[in-house]
Length: 248
Image 1: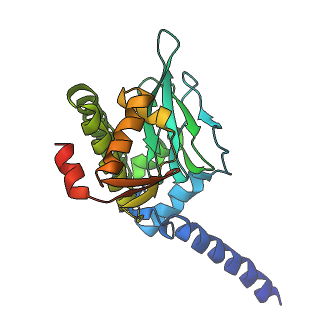
Image 2 (image 1 turned 30 degrees about the vertical axis):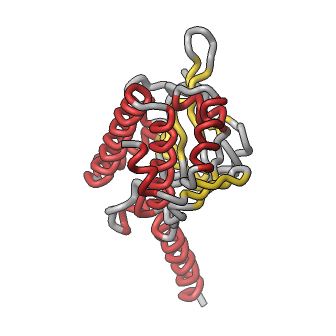
């Protein structure tokens, strides 16, 4: 009986290790996320520092601008937006984030969050304490490579946004924005043609540097031209080729 009592905790430990091991690997976002390329034993160590959040309600803050930077976040479900306040008190939408995407990368250098992040719908995240990531990175070079890759992707996105805001017409901006969403949803295993716009038209207009009326007018024109169909927040891209030509 003594031998059996020793075996039982062993099975429990093995079951816990197995649960930890598959926590990331079984996630549908695995190939888009930080653990990609890590060995199973490394995933177990990474899982130990990850906190998987409860649901954030619509408009609930994930973090506030200028608050102390402690963690990076990866969207598990739903979507978020980030905003900054300009000198005249106006709010500028700086980005939208979907499952598998990192929020808070721009806070690393300043050690404080550079924007306010709020959920656009019922959403959840994985929280990665940065101190823990740094410690693990000393033992896992691949983890450092993955983090650098995500930072590089963020910088590339910033440059694309600068081009979008500075050089394109309203129609080109909207077409580029819709195609960008299409690509991001497709990468996450969702439809590239049919998806939900979780953000408001006001948020889209703010992000693209347009008036809300302009966004509504251009979207209506796209629909009249057979490029898209819109029903409430649902949108279908009907002619990808023409949208691509339109955005240059």
